[in-house]
Amino acid sequence: MNIVILDGYTLNPGDLDWAPLHRLGNVKVYDRSSEEEIVARAAGAEIILVNKVVLSEKTLDQLPKARYIGVMATGYNNIDVAAAKKNNIIVTNVKAYGPASVAQQTFALLLALVNHAELHSQSVFNGDWVASPDFCYWKTPLTELAGKTMGLIGLGDIGSLVAKIALAFGMKVVAYRKNPAQTENEDIEMVPLEDLFRRSDVVSLHCPLTEETKGLINAERLSWMKPNAIILNTGRGPLINEADLAAALQNGTIAGAGLDVLSIEPPKPDNPLLSAPHCIITPHVAWASFEARKRLLQMVADNLESFAAGSPKNVVS
Image (cartoon, rainbow, N blue to C red; front, side, top):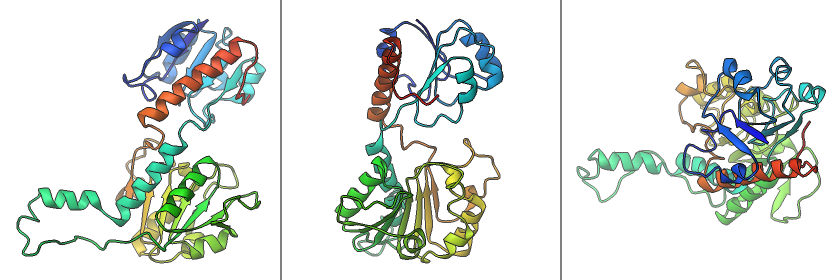
């Protein structure tokens, strides 16, 4: 099989081995591919692997040899699945390769907002502690998580792990999901969505992006929250109306936000959250631990091997 990887850099900037794929065919890896480069680079390949490269109907119609598209991620909205099906191309994705990493990043964002470790470390290295008349000082209020309420919107693999970590911190956990079935974890209370916003000190988003959940966080729901509350998003950027969140942070409607995703990535310079107070933003790295990326690469290879054997799995087309 001729295999082309059109945007390999994000998954593997050089610290992983492409060997699991090399065992399955002739592999050509491109770190990045512009829209204009896709057809020429993929023309001779039966197998096309992408992370975020967009494969439109126009592009797929120009790739008659293509038989398989492996998305090296969970989300596959960058693929015109209907066009792939029309062209008899199987499309697969990868799920559940990094719940532990995403849950860890969720708490990294939360701890950054309540403990401000980096702020205080920078202060020390700037000489503030050396010059302090006291044995200790703090630049901003510090918040204890024990006894606070964590509200989870979505309770799949990642949300469930976040719940376990929250409980270990001594937090109370409430959750909402579209399917209201009670969780097996008796320490998690399932509640209506409005109750979750009104009761939670921290609201963390772990639900899929759908037409129903787009703009889930908006001005009305932010107005239900406590003034000391924090929003966390390690899910999908469009779950949040960014202008509404920026306004809520400016006005003190809520206390802070920790975001790993934005509606447009990379963001435009005029994204209102880039200048919002009490807002921490990381560049969509929750999935990107070495361990998670290594698992992802192996699962991409497993998907392709199953396709080659005539039993494709994780098919989304």
